Image (tube, rainbow, N blue to C red; front, side, top):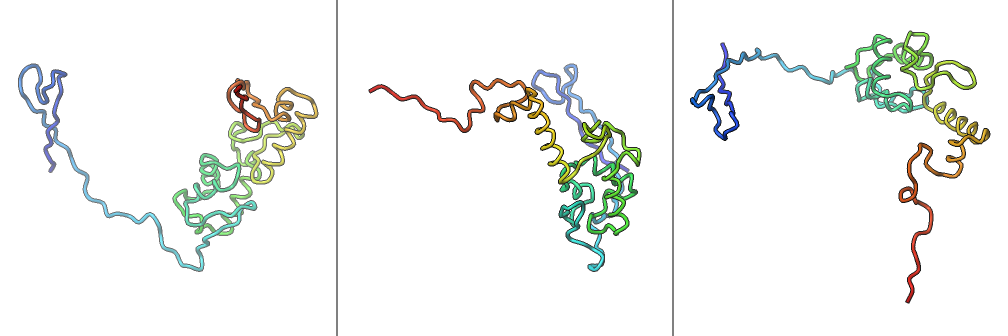
Length: 193
């Protein structure tokens, strides 16, 4: 049926179990759930089907991890993006990455390459309204570095304030720099003897 557990009340006067000056114990009946057999989290598959290392978008992905965690090894893909990609591709998020078939891997690569085609909203992507193409894109792996380098070069060439701060190696977001960020410069004052 159930177990009876005491729940001690505190009135703030230092006595446990007192309610309005009388010593009463409140009894709650807690229904215990029936025991469910424990399910193994890792399913054992045939060794010829399981891949320990996958190559996706020029990145080595660990096949022993769950798909959503394993996809985060790709630069530009976080946990949320990995979850959305798996749901759009129809892949079980509790599945191990090494259990993916070639068709599922190709689906993942296609969705990451063109997320707008599968109705992933623009605010979810990491590059909105690209400067050159004017499209919403999601950059991953090497494209992430290329776009960042191009943006910095464009800002330096246009002599923008942010570009100049990058050029000089200073903070770009308005922080104070009088006392912090003094790396690379000689520090010290000569003492008089």
